[in-house]
Length: 242
Image (cartoon, rainbow, N blue to C red; front, top):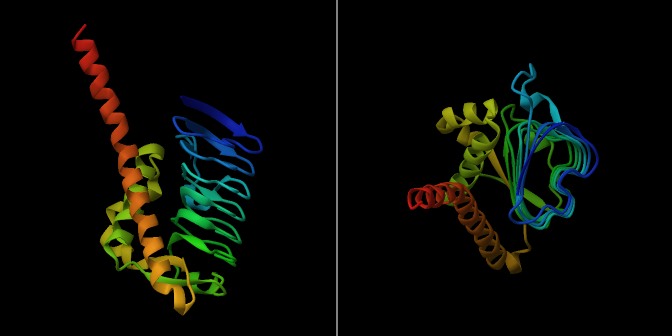
């Protein structure tokens, strides 16, 4: 099911979105986008004639992906406060967010291609976030109580956010995403990986869990990107067979 919409969506756009659904909104949405979503894709993009830069304009309100368990959201603009609060499995690419990003997050993957507000990662106990820190100020804006920052040195930590940004570009035609991919070698060192820091006694187990999460997210993303091409090939074959 593919739905293409245009305009300003009210509260809870795409709530409980499930497998086999894609919601594409050209415009903007209010709070609780993707609340409780379990699968599928939600895409938010500004009109082509919009004069505003996505990474400096809010396209989704507060509490995006509240309690989500799966699926993907790609937003060519900023999200409000509490992005990904209690997210336990969804993937998301946004171009900035307000305060309290990834609050109480327990799973999933968040990619932020711009500035965040204060208190990022408060209460975060699972999942992983990647944040592009162009101004060098992110270490002053995250919450060190439960999470720590690391640069992207593991191969999968390079492949996963890049693949998500490529998908973001495919679906939204984001100028921000295109610029980042064009300058990837230069910008890669400016990304931070945000992960919960486990107690010493469970570090090895926690590290394995988060690596498995990242590997599964990358595998799932590759399948999503391959599915449209397979469907088109099958349709063409059916048409040829008459």
